[in-house]
Amino acid sequence: MRLPWRLFRRRDEPNIFEPHRTDASGTDLVVEWIDAVTTGLATAPPGPPEAAPARVCDGMFTAATIVAVLIDKIADRTEYRVANNRCMASAVDFMKVLGEDTLRRYRIDGVQPVGWENLGPEMDEALIARRLGRLGEALQLALLAVTTDYDLSDDVREAAEESGLLAADVLVEACQAIQTDPTR
Image (cartoon, rainbow, N blue to C red; front, top):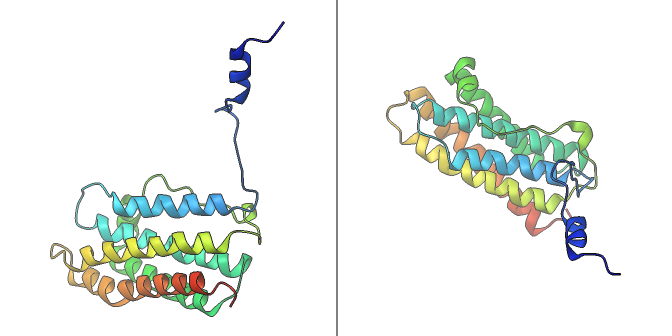
């Protein structure tokens, strides 16, 4: 006697209560982290004027952290070092101008940072660089909105224009350089 088809169908369905990890290297975790921050920048809910630069600061700090992971775990490249320095300097500039309370209040929701021990040297550098480049482009758009928002103080707009846009440009260019020549 044959088994009913429902039994076979139930075997193929994944258990939604069981954690499922397809990638042991940590690439999926980093990509999900980048995508969450990019989505948070692109679909920010309306709020007071200080919310946008606070989210940009969160994005800059995330970019600097992920580039530091790439430097430590995958490849110590000059492009990564420059992008890390620029993004971290920009995040610090925003921290000085906005203040700690504002940054805490308007953080990007739904972002789960990744533990260092979950990442390995066999991560997919090209995929991470591509997604990091998209984060840089989202940062550029968010920074342009900040520089043209006259409800913000001059210090915030100046930080966005002088250090923020430069850092986002460097991040995008570094990721494009890695994608065009991954062997360097």
